[in-house]
Length: 342
Image: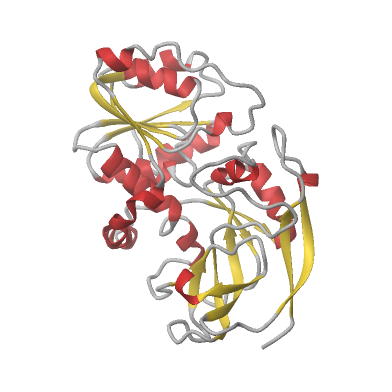
């Protein structure tokens, strides 16, 4: 199979502050046949994630920056339509990192076959059964060293990662408090995710006071997705020997000036707090346990999630930008083509 017409998204300008639509371009390309060891994948769903904002900056980090005027990268799932890798024959469904495009020529050893008979929809391998779910699992259980009966505070609690953190903590018989930015998201956390208390950080007034009221016995584990006043409030509420798992700080990703840190950092010393930032890739050894546990929890009805889906690769920049306005419910995805697994 040769000369497949495809579209892909290029970063054409490095954003300053909040990214703008003109920072991206949708480009028509032609994809050739796979070489030895490669597969040609028709991408079906792709993920957009807050961490991608950091890769748009030309700076040294845990992942290299996106190159200008080239296709961007990100998690995606799709169907193998041509193959020169015996481990991934035609018809196999795989996940890989050549997202932001309709078709991808992928090295076979850089793709992972998906168990499409798991009962979960294909796009779940980009959310609950994918990187966000694994981030929640490793961050809460290993970095946060969760113990049964802990009180857990989760920022961005209705998001792709936060919602899974909340539900794992409930499965582990913990008291869970979440923050979110709308009454609708807060109600979902109470009614569907089943957590114990929620804070609408946009309407609560003083977040530190709101958290103190929601957690009168203090917080043992804080799962950090937001930063800023959320971190300050959490430090104030933490119990001695509490643990803070730093997953992300989306409130600061588009800042053009240095943001002052919390003014109560001295409490980290007095309370003997543990604060640890983490990257999910550093915990790949937990993957087998994560897949086993998550599939069991899903089959038992203990885990649920929300999705927001944009249609078409040309809408991928819009989906990405919507992450920073809070327009999404749960995992933000882009549908690139028809899903034959349904």
